[in-house]
Image (cartoon, rainbow, N blue to C red):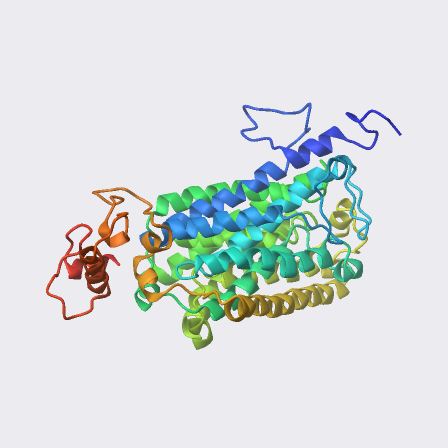
Length: 487
């Protein structure tokens, strides 16, 4: 073995570069000497700011900062370094040694620091997705505690069970890049958390019009680019299977987007850009567990299913069943991630090919199309474990925060009325005087009893409570009717 610490014998520089960087704008920048093709982690990491920007645009204006901040905060806990048997990866020797997942028998040809960095991105985006079910009412202080607890006691268990060499890995459950570990997990946990946290204000549920659709589109575009890094990096090498995974990701996603848009036109007579983004997301989610083990025609089939089955779940079942109406899942994370993630995992059991499994370096004999019907049952068992794990752990964690830590899960009614201004003391846009300091928001250091009375009157006006003669909003002179409409 080489004694040169700058170039150990086990290091394949192309594989390391594949995991660390990316070929963006391939017609302008070609990193052939380092990567040979394209890479994973930096591209995958783009998914985090992509969702932050998407959340900021898709919610009501008064929740733009809170929604973006919940996602941004959650993403930081992905760096919490737990891998397999819990233990820190923080010493220099730990970071420089060759990557090794002993329970899974995997030894990639790059350092452990690269492996931890790549896995960090998966953990980060899982909690960011979960946040989408809780936007517009969760107490930020409760969220600050929930993130590390859920990551440690729920996500890590699921990730190790399927990826790290746990019992589902040993039994042969296929989850190429996180259909179960990330999407079924976050979709289930988000729905359960939405039940325990409680709903938004009735007026917010009735009218939650996106404040900036173009900003939402920017986030969606970044997210799509980032997904290529997730799926392309999971072979842990710059291999032919990585290229197949990237191609299948884009085939399925495009098909899903088109299918969702066509269904919108057929049933609602208009193509919706918000709907198209939902179709994009369900396509990305569904292909994730299958990206490198199915053929191109399988990606087309999966795209058609991911653009239609979650559409039915969200647009028909979700609107008619009282069960879904009682739980306020803000962005429909259950439909776009839990349903789509389960669908993708199930179809992997049908469409996986022998060649794809061999290229991914797993011993599975393909799926049902290869005569291996047992794989379908393995996929169902894997899904049921992830669902049960998140039902239980999410409930326990939230009840612990509420009753043991004594932190309310939901914001107060007054904070829910004001949104970002109450939760963070900030506003997302500074148009026409918005963003100015205001007595209403408590911005004065020396407040008099008259200031407190004025603040109380302003809050009463926003709530639309009768019995006050002052009918103007203190902040900008709006009438109470205008205030009700703007809120």
